[in-house]
Image (tube, rainbow, N blue to C red; front, side):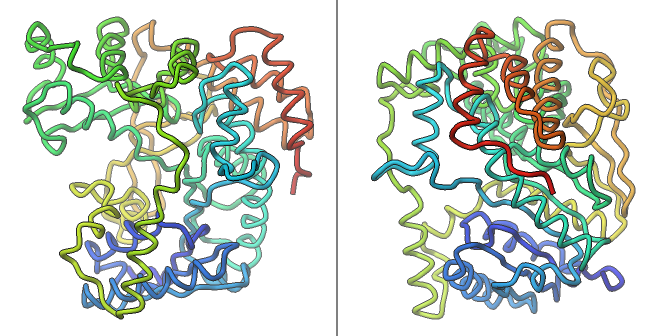
Amino acid sequence: MRGLQIRKFVILGGGGLGVVPPFVDMARFPEVFAETEVALYDVDAQKAELMAQFLNLTARAQNVARRARAYTDLAAACEGADFLLSRFRPGGSRFQATGVSHTHALYRWANDCGYFADDTAAPVAVVMYLEGIDTTMQVVRVLERVAPQAWFLNYTNPTQVMADTIWRCSSIRAVGLCPGYLNACHDLSLILGDVRPEEISVRAAGVNHHTWVFDCRIRGEDGYALLRRRLPTIQRDALQPYQRWALETWERVGYFPAPAGHMQPAFSNRALLARVRAGLDAHWDRPLAQTQDTSAGRWEFIRQCVERNAIPSEDPRWRAFDYNPWTPNLEVHFATAVASGQEAELQLNLPNRGLLPDLPEDAVVEGPTRVCGGDLKQLPVGRLQPAAVPVLVRLCDFTANLTAAYLRQDPGRIRQALAAHPATESETQAATTADDILKRVGIPVSR
């Protein structure tokens, strides 16, 4: 960084649609992003180049000097980086089936193993970690050589396991990022019916994709108190299945789950799997969606913009890139707090340093963290309600075993990781699934 200005912000997976929101959001913080080079690196060099052209059109529309550039050489992309954002999606040919995407083939396999499929739940998380960790560590080793002071911002799932591996074998500064806890604002808005998501603020803590909302404010008042008052008037039959589950979980545990859709498999794996096998969407009252490429329309929009050398801002497809319009993207907000030295409270995945005393020290936990310059300080939450703790303990064990499987090259830890996961119903299921994973994917040699 030069003064407050971020000189270079690298995005791994730079040919993906997910790079648009953070690039656009950088305009909110000209004090640090005015002249930043956003370096895009992707195995699909053509998509990275197309994305760079599109992003530069958005910069022109915003009247800023910030520019995107596509790289075909990883070391060149990383050289001089201040921040690197990893948001590639692991996936090779091992689970590929004719006419079926890698993700859907992987999900079908997980269903066959007796699991509801979710990116950060067993066994999909295990496969994604094993398919993605080699690339992640390759990038880490490059950063150690050409940009040792850079921050590694990890969005690649399972984010807490990827980040944990980096902490345990590199001096590169790393954090795990995920905005999933903000889903609670949407869910509570839908449950209450007359409150907008932007009128709700939440603070949550736990393990990534499995956090408990310990502080909720709705229109400035105690959100849980308001929810209790409104409880008798809520028409539960009108809610979606996952919303009913979230509400019932709050009544039983004492905290609202966030994000509820990702968290539910840890408690209701068998029920969710039954819905999928019956041809129903697991979380919504609708048929299960057929496999399709939902990104095709957005890519067509990008190509049209590049061909016309302009972005029609009134086109509704442009809004499809805006994930959380009322709050900055987490990676942009984090980089701004580090570069500017302006204090901010952000939701981060870090080793447990007193955030949650119910969980092991050094276990990867997610929760509120004060960021000021390069200083990160977790804000202690205190002890949770007893009913909220067991699932988090098992998830910490899952992460620890999965990380150890790679770092120690120990296949037995794959079975132990699966056995620890709350969605696993038996040791036999864990062992059988682990054997299949090792045959299909294996453990990459640690770097």
